[in-house]
Amino acid sequence: MAAYLIANIEVHDPEGFARYGALVAPMVARFGGRYLVRGGPLQTLEGQPGINRLVILEYPDMATLRGFYFSEEYKPLLAMREAATTSHVTLAEGYAP
Image (cartoon, rainbow, N blue to C red; front, side, top):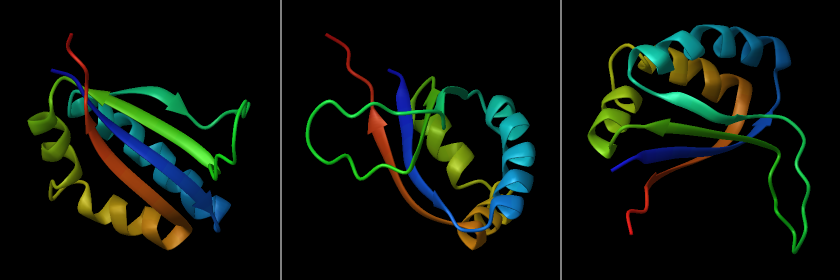
C-alpha cells in the first residue's frame, strides 16, 4: 500500500533550502519516491490552513518511505533542511478500499 510523507515547511534560509532541494530530489527518486506536491500556490477554501510550503512525497509502501527518511544517506540532508527551515513532517499510510 502506498505511503506518503507530508511536510509543511517554513523557509528561513532560501539559499540553504535551494541547496537542499537540488540534492534531495535525486535521492527521493533513488529510494523509490516521487513528488506529488512540491511547493506551489495553495488555495484555501475553508478554515485556516496554517500551511507555508506544502510537500507531499509518495512511496510504494511505508517500509520504503521509512528506509529513505531514516537512512544514513539522508541524515546530512535532513540536517541541512533543519538548518534552513522550520518543518512539520508526517508519514501517512495510503488508503485501499
